[in-house]
Length: 325
Image 1 (spheres, rainbow, N blue to C red):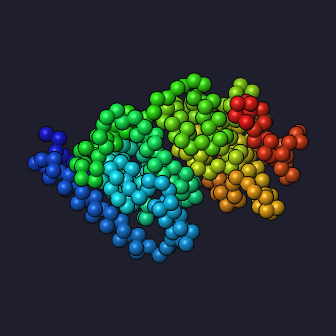
Image 2 (cartoon, helix red, strand yellow; image 1 turned 60 degrees about the horizontal axis):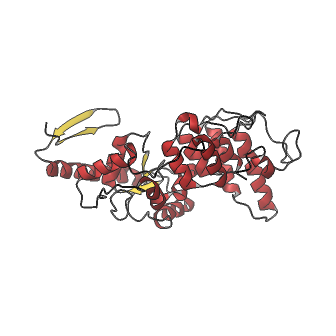
Image 3 (cartoon, one colour; image 1 turned 45 degrees about the vertical axis):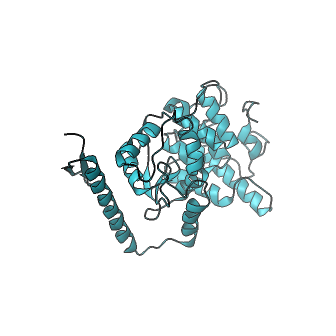
């Protein structure tokens, strides 16, 4: 064929093959079919008895209106995008969402903003990143390429999206020194989301599961849990962080998450300022528990480490390099 074909694939993996006479006809058919799928999903959702609670509605509105850049599609600038890529933390139009689905869920996990369920971990990533921050990384160096517009053909949008996320052609210059694993640990401790996005885009699974040092066996995941950061924890899990890893004292990600939760609760009870709230750290503990994480070496009830006198805050950064603190 001349490339004017397209496929429809059902949930049970049945495929239908179609061929149009030209690219304009193909794009028109694809657009109409996607719109019909969207309408069908809306119809299914409207028939469900479980409505969104006020908190979910507020969160959806926050993702749309309060996160910088989310008023327009991350890839073509179409207004009022209704689809999301969870692991990229961005919103997109329905046409670009179809291209993202074709990339595979290992690159882009596509969800409907209004139709799918949104657990706290997913929401936290969407609120922490957004289109402006994501594009400051994924479109940092477009090398003269012209970004598609809402009027661009599907073919043009697909070429841009594949170059952007699959080929990683527009990422900023990256210096792998210090080692990526060390940089990732430091970025996690700083809660530096932009650096984390850049590092994850360049990291291997080995980097993501590297330890802070030869003596400090905490990984980026354990550090994220120690500071109670739900969004970073969720991102690392999506990037295959090892949930079973323990540090030199047998403490797991759940151990540190529970400690962060206890500290947040204590701060709240004393009306003391703190960088995370109880709701976030509770959601973090629930996420890890739902994934089968265990707590083999819990912190003591007083919030101190076994065999040590330090507070949980001190324990978070104990034995970490001075360049991080």
